[in-house]
Image 1: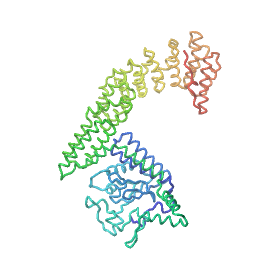
Image 2: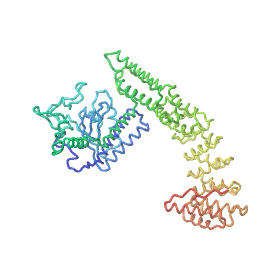
Image 3: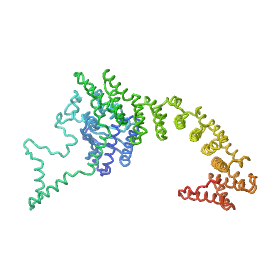
Image 4: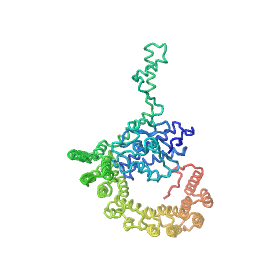
Length: 615
């Protein structure tokens, strides 16, 4: 690209360079750095990494709300947007700026139309470069092969071709970049704007002397004491640390604390295992790494264990590791994922001080090898929350092994029976497992309730037939739960069954609370079609022919059904019931009407506004 015709988004003065916009750009690269480094530590489904990815997406979205393109220049350890530094990191092994700069990239441009797929590919490309010793391809080559449509870049070597020829950089391992000042002193860096160059004949003075002379020029007539005070005030204004600078330092310290120093040491030391010309030194390194790994295991701290395991795996996957070093790393992984370690981690899950997230986070990093430990944890603990988290972890790592895991669980224990239902729900099969049919009649009502809810969620013909059977179960509690649950099922078989119960002459033989539940569900499923049948309950010749008490109960059932029905006809009938001679009916109908009015006004009704169950 010709530098004379290169685009400069700031040249026309149209780009918003307000502090708020600068902070948006800073947020983009701060979240990008966390995401890139996070991908080196965490598994793709780790909640922390997902949080980092969401922060990066939000930062990009926030910037592109007002700008069509993000163009930044790249210096050795910094990335700049216009004249503002928006990213800075002087650690070569993890600095995004240095990764780009060392291979000659001087500018990166991202358009607002960039797709999430392109952005993900770009992030992964940078991630693969972090701490990579491979020199097979530089990042420019990888960007060229990626063929991005909405992400572009400029290579600084192109500017140097006319003066220095076509030569490639990095001919030796010691050469990181042809743009080092020692290689091309004539070429200014991006940081050289406004820099004063002192010639060979120039006089150099100490910096503090220069500043004192500068201050004295504006301090005529001041005494020595006043001049010193004026100097101190001026220096304080020169070198005061802004709140933004302090925030950046705090952020950097927080990022550094998030990774255990032992893991960082192991990560750095693993590179020394590749030493070829000093076998004794390599052996010493292996011994140190093994001792550190043993220390990590003894601490049983989930995040540190997970980071160590990821560090070792990344080392093997990203380096050309000799067979003996690969075998050593494999032995370390076996230690970290040994069943005794995994079981011990599970035992810490019941300790509220340490929490469960770190335990299951480590199990996710370990993968399917952790399944027996999780199964044991389920067998030995009675905390419902722990069971829920354990099932979520099993789903993440179990995959097609979930059916086999279910077969190995002891459903004689109610909590584990609930775990089985929870695990089955995560599957995508429409067939109802035999174990569900068995659990529908489980002694513990909570298990029966969960099994019924599973059928409700399934909603197919077989599930509807089973629900209809449960509605007529001999045990009242099972009937009540099934009747309440099927109000969410839009299936003809279920609707017909509920209507049959609601209009049955045997209905008065059931207790009032069960009659009410039937009519609530009848109103919900039949809707406006239920109104003519409900009106019969309010007439003088109700089908409840067993006396006045039953007729009053019929009107109460009508209120509960109408509560679930929209439409003018239902509302009119409710108003009639609000004037009924029976105080119970009047009160129930008035409460429903009051709730309807509040819903229409957008007000949230209180719990006391609902119809109270009678009987």
